[in-house]
Image 1 (cartoon, one colour):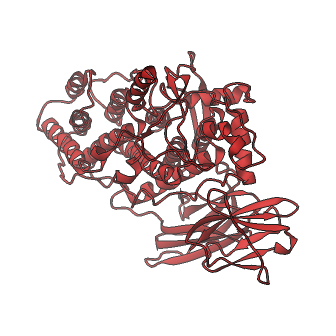
Image 2: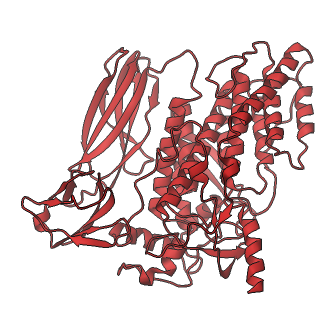
Image 3: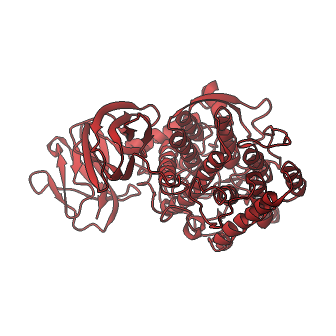
Length: 626
C-alpha cells in the first residue's frame, strides 16, 4: 500500500503534463538564419519558431494552447497598430512610424517573459540577435515600445481569464456507476502500463472556468452527445476500436499503424504549428498575413480545447479502455469484453488513456480547427505538404514517420482516425470532435482578426441544415451582399471530399437581410454540407461545414425532433417493439401507439433520449425533448 501511495504521488505530478511530450526537448524545426535585413514574414516566422521552442517542454497541452494564443495575439496586435491591415484584438495604440520587425521581436519577447516561459532558453540572446538586424533609430525604438505594449495589453486582458482557478487534479467528479459513464483508467510508469488505476481527474473545471477569446461561451459548439451503449452504432464503434486499437492482437494495417504513431504527438500545438509553417513555405506572404494566420490558428485551438473539456466533463463518457474491460456488464449483448485489453500506445508517460472523459475528443478538435482555418484562409482545401512527426512517444522510434498530405482536411481526418488506431477513443468521439473544431474555426475566422476597411462579397449571418423526413433542408441568411454572384451548394459523405450539388443564384447587392433555402435527399448516414460563396470576379469563400445525420436506410422516421408533447413514427406499423431509453441507454418504457402512429411524450423531462425501434432490423434515433 505504501508503494502504491508513492506511485500515485509520482503519477499525479507527472500527469500534470497530460496531452504532452514524453520528454523535454526543443522544437527541431529548421530556423532560417537572420540576415542583415528581414524581408516579408521572416521575423514573424523566426519568433513563431522560438515560441514553439519554449512551449515544447512539458506542460498540460491546454496550457500550451493558452500561451501560444496570447503570444500570437501580441505579435498580431503589434503589427496592426503600425499599419492596421487586420482588426486588433487587445491593443489600440496606433504607432505609424514603428519598425515592424522590431515590433514583432519585442511583442514575442515580452510576451514570453511576461508569461514566465523563458525557462533555461536563451531568450535574451534571441531578442538581441533579432534587434541587431534592425537599423538603429527612432523607428526601431518605437517598434520595441509598441511590441512591449502589445504583450502587456494581451497579458492584462487574459489576467482574469480563469487560468488561476484551474484545479490541476481532483477526486471529483467520482467514478461513474452505469454503463457508459467515465471510470478511472490504467496508470503507467514511463509509458509502461501498471496494474493500478489513476484515481484523479485532471483539469476537470477547465472548460467551466476558462474565459473564451472570441466565441460566446464554451457551450456554444457543444455536440449532441455520444451513442447510447445498447445501440447498433455504439456496437460498431466499440468493435472497431477494440480490434484496431488493441495493444495485443490488433487488426491494424501497417499504414494504420504508421498513422497512429505519426499523430501520437501529445503536444498538439507543436505538430499543428509545424503543419501550418509547412503550408506557408510555398506561399508569398507578408508579415501581417503570416501573423494573422498564426493568431487565427492558435486562438481557434485554444477555443477548441476549452469547448472540448467543457463537453467531455458534461457528458462524462468512458474511454475505450474501460468500455472493453467492462463490456461483460454493459447491458449490450453484442459487445464482448476483455478484462486485460489495453490501447496500442500510452497517451502519456503516466497514463495509458489520459484521465479525462472521452466525448468529444479534444485532439480531434485541434485537427478540425487547424484544417478549417487553413482552408478558409487560403480559399482552398488543396495543399502539398511533406512533414515528419514531432512525436516524442517512446513507442515511436527513429526514424520518425513522415507523410504527404494533398489536402488540409485529409490531415484532420487522419488525425481523428489515429485515435482509433491508437486505442484512445471511439469513432464518434473523434469525428464529432473534429466537426466541433471545424465549426469553432469558422466562427473565429468570420468574427475576428478580419481585414480592415473591406467587406466580403457576402456576409453570411446564418447557415443551418435540418433533417426532415430524410430530406436535408438547408437555410442560410446573408446580412449584406456586394457584387455576389451565386452560392455553390456542396455535399460530402465523409466531410473531406466535397462536390457541388447545385448552384443557387445570389440576390445581387443588398444591405438588408436575404434568406435562401435548398433541399436535398439524404442518402447516407453521415451527410456534410457547405456553401461556396462566389463573387462576380470569380473569387470565393466557404461557409462552415454542417453535418446532418441521415438514418434513412429504412422507411422508419421519427418527427418532429426536437419535440414537446408528441412524436410521430412513420412506418411504426412495421415494428415489433418501440422502446424509449434514457441517454445512457436504460429502458424508460415501451411506447404504445395512440393511433395514427403518434406517441405521447409529455411525461418526459426536457433532455436527450433514444427511441429504439425493433423490426426486421433495429434502428435507434436520438430524440430531443423540449
